[in-house]
Structure formats: structure tokens, C-alpha cells
Amino acid sequence: MRRSTCILFIRVMILSTLAFSCRGLNDRKVEPVVIAHAKAVIDSNFLHSPYLQVAQYDFNTAWLYIIEPNNSFWLDTGKERVDNGYELPTDLMEYKGKFIFFYLNNKKRLSEELLDKTMRQKKGGNYRELDTHTHMDTCGIWVYFKDKHSDRAAYAHRGDRQPFSAYPELRYFLCNEQDSSVYYSHIIDMRMWKPYIYGTENKYGKFSNPNQIEFDVKICNRTDSALYISTRSEEYGHFVFKDGENSLTFHVSDAGDAVEVSPGMYEIAPHTDIVLGLSTEKKPIVFKNIPRKKYPEKIHQMVYDSVYYLPTHTVPQSEKRYIWNKKFKVYPLYLSYYYYRIDSVEHTVYWDGEIEEIAGRKFRR
Image 1 (cartoon, helix red, strand yellow):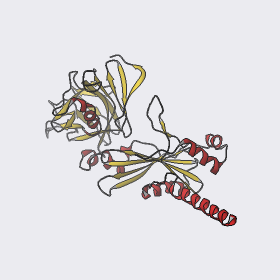
Image 2 (tube, helix red, strand yellow):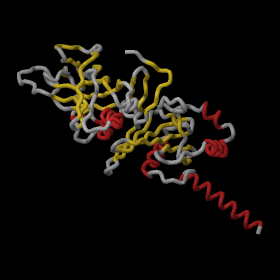
Image 3 (cartoon, one colour):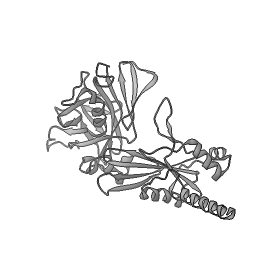
Image 4 (tube, helix red, strand yellow):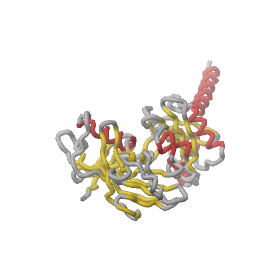
């Protein structure tokens, strides 16, 4: 009886080890295609780091997976959180001597104690010291997008860590397939960053009484000739937040080093770019048919999905210059964030809509 029990125990241990290696400790399914992409990175011999992190992000119409080498099972979320900007994985698996950690939405995190115990069993008691001194890869990251409503997907290796917009196969997931930023990306590109929403606290809350929005737009000329862009609606075009019946118009508040050839008209030399600071007029911002308590959600949606350059007048045929005169959707960098400046306190808004006050950070206008 004692011998049978021992054999049974050994069999259970073997099966448990196999289950750990194939499925992970959390016993939850991971998309097979995501696992396949992670394994392919290891198969390619790119990876020298001991671990591969696979983080999942939820965007409006697609799932985004970032696959990146690391020497820790802690994921740096990129959030400037006061408590902790790191997260533990939800699943893990071992493959060819490497460990793949998955950080999936709406799944229970593995405990640090369990991960530590597992790593000690697999790699030895001094695994932390060994991992710290392991060579960190500089091979970039791998990106996988999966559309939520179709079979459309894209996979790319960002070896030089350029913005996602620099990769044609990813551009569809940055904007709607019909957007001009897909059709005209070989001519022009427009990217938004550093948005600031100003306001004052009132009875509806901190973020429901905005009075001004600012952001920078980087405009890239990808042609062999000079390109011109108008920023005045009374001429050829301007920048707006546009979503149904709600619309906000922006004017140039800071042209930086951009060459202004006439009021509101800027020249962009071949294969170069300019950065324009844009701003709304300072006055209460009111959205039609949107409850005040929903303003933060509305602004978040508009920042990520409703910024456009819109033409207003047709360029005369006699005009010799190449003046941009087509609708173009402006998008922020993925996983970027923006700021609320309420009264004298600054708050960070992350890509998932989470808002956090930046402790000790004040500002003056």
C-alpha cells in the first residue's frame, strides 16, 4: 500500500509539472495565437533575457498585446502611481528554458509568494541576483493587435521602437479603416501628444467643469516637395475636436520653430516635421446632451478618437503651392496619457481612463 501511494504521488507530481509548463499556474486559458507569437520570439533566438512579458491592453475596437523581454516578473505599467506602478502576472509558462509571463485583463494576479517559490524551485534560491545581472535585450518589442469585431489582426516587431504609426500594418488599428490617416500616410502624418485639460472644481466634481484644452501636434511631410498647411477656418482648414454635434475649434498658441509664411499658414520642408501648440479659447466647455458627470468620459473618448484636421475652403487651381486640403484624423501615441489641471493641482489621465492626482505637483499659468 505504501509503495502504491508513493507511485501515485510521483505520478501526480509529474502531471502537475507538465500542467505548469503547458498551461501556467493560474489554470486560465490564454489565446493560442498570443502564446504562439511569444514562443516565436524565443524560437527566433532574439531573446537573451530570462523572461518574456506579454501584456494585454484594451482599446475601443481592438486588443493590444505588447511582447517584451525583461529580467523580472514585475510589469512596469508606465503609470506614475503613488502606491505602485508595477503589476504581477496572471499566468505563466516555461518554454525552452525561458519563462513567459502573461498580464491579462480581468484575471486574478498570481501572488508574489507563489511566483517566488516557483522561481526558486526552477532556477535556484539566488535567482533574483542572477536575473539582475542578466544581459537585458535591446532587440525592441513585438506588437500584436486583434480586432474585437472581426478576424483582422496584425503583428510587427518594433526593433527601433518607432511610434506605432510608423508601421503600415499597425496603422489600421490606430484609426478606422476609412480614415484619411490610412490613405494619405505616405504624404503626411499628424500625431498628438501632451494634451492638457484645464478647469475648476464645482458641484459636479473636479473634472466636469473644463474651460480650455491644449495639445501639441507634430505634422510630418513625407514628400519630396514643400507642404503647406492652414490653421485658420476662414482660409483652407483648421484643427477640431469633432464628435457628432459636439465640436471644439483649436487655434495655434505656439508655433515654435515652424515657418509661418502668412497668417495661419505654415510651411513644412520635404521630409521634415513641425510642431504646433494648439488651444481652444478659454471659456466654459459645454457638451450637448452629455450629463456633467459624464464629461471626463466624453473628453477621454474625444482625445483618443475625435481629433481632426478639417478642410474649410477649396484651394484655387491657380495656387502653385502644395497646400494640404483633405480631412485627416489626428491620433495620440498608444499607451500615452494626458493631464487635467484643475485649479492649481495636476492630475494624470492614463490610457485606460484612470485618473490620479500627482502628489506634490502644482502648476501656475
